[in-house]
Amino acid sequence: MVFSSTTFLFIFLPLVFLLYIPLPFKARNVLLLIASLIFYAWGEPLFVFVMLFSILFNYVFARFIDSSKDEK
Image 1 (cartoon, one colour):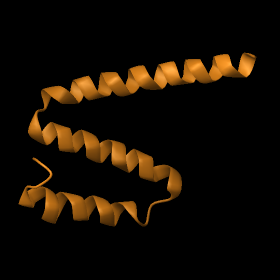
Image 2 (cartoon, rainbow, N blue to C red):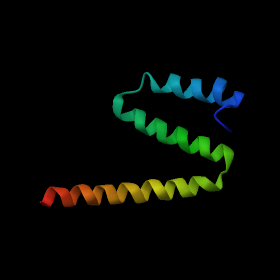
Image 3 (spheres, rainbow, N blue to C red):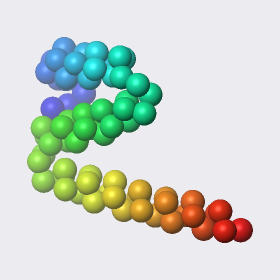
Image 4 (cartoon, rainbow, N blue to C red):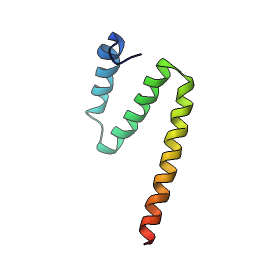
């Protein structure tokens, strides 16, 4: 699926938008994460594992940086 496809413009994007609006603030990020993974899986399912690894890697190192900042 590409951004200019009719599937994205008329089904995927409106559905994500309609689900996004009523959610509480903290749940919105989870929805966007799941929607992003679905979007990438639609095009190339193998890249979902790359995305999950990247998400986990960045999260762990961001937590490490944040904890080292608090020690100073």
